[in-house]
Amino acid sequence: MRRVLAQSKKELTQFGRDRLTVALAFVLPLATLLIFGFAIRLEAQNIPLAIQDFDNSPLSRAYIERIFATNQFQPVDWGTRDPLQQALDPGVAKAAVIIPPNFSRQIKVGIPVEVQVLVDGTDVNNARVIRNSINATTQFFLRESGLQTQPPNIDLQSRIWFNPGRQEALYIVPGTIAVILWIYPSLLAAIAMVREKEQGTIIQIYASNLSAIELLVGKGLAYLLVGLGQAIVIMGISFLLFGLRLAGDPTPLLLGTPLFVVVAVTFGLVVGIRATNQNASVQVVATLGFLTAFLLSGFIYPLSNIPFPLSLISNIVPTRYYIPIIRDAFVRGAGWPGIWFDVVMILLLGLLLFNLAGRSLRRMQLPD
Image (cartoon, rainbow, N blue to C red):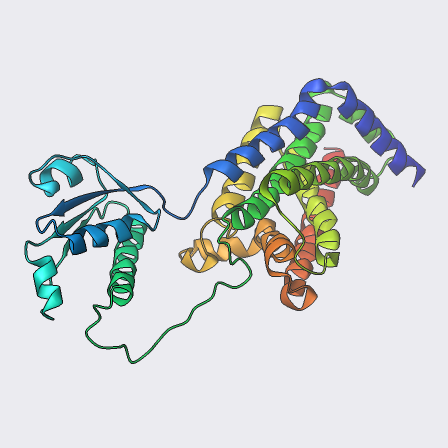
């Protein structure tokens, strides 16, 4: 145990002396949090919308005002002729609403009116949002104006659970924290391990009586402390800037976060053992670590949308299991009954990576 602590102290001393590494550990994660937290928005807003009103009546103008009152659309100036050629084709607008000349008169006498909506289908998800929003706004306008010809047979009353204010930060920021705590501790551990080989100090370790497990535990403990420091700083900034608050039992987060950082550090040690130089280790962490954490973890896209066989790879991505833990802590608040399986999977993946790191390092220590 004394040799493990000595190894950890040595790693922390080297870490503190290298200002570039310290900046990598704390400045870049903060920049990532700010960029992702403020830049990523999944709900389409300020969608440019062109309106062509051939009726120009008080009722048609009220309908137009109701569409823009949703704060989801933004009117665009596209001219007075064909909106398809002047607005949609050049990309000035993402949708166009064309109101017929007899809009007001036909509604008042109970005759169905055909309002044409042209939607840019280049972005399929955005097109679906636009169509659903205009349909819902139209139905709401008819009900509020007393123009519904007959009451619907089903009156749907919906309520948004867990996040009634529809704050996207409550979804994006916890996922961003998970990605940060996966990428940067693993990157630091990989660089630290491969630096030993580049500088030749790994030979001294091989010549000593320090075992492979003691070396891994010593380095891992040092960067576990660094990773926990990153977690405290990033979560503290998230509380201040994005209004994150604990929603329920904090014990799954308090246990899952150190466990997840351990897995991230172990992944970095595996990469550092296998890589031949620091550039290679950074590329491996960026490719295997960042891309899988970003695309195959449920951070942005639902796991059900991942096609086969990539869906199989997502089962061994540790970030996939930490994201439900941190989102539950800050949004859902279900506690252990809802996320116990994710904690177990992180533990199993950590044991698998540690075993792989130990085998690889012992193989390096054996003489040719």
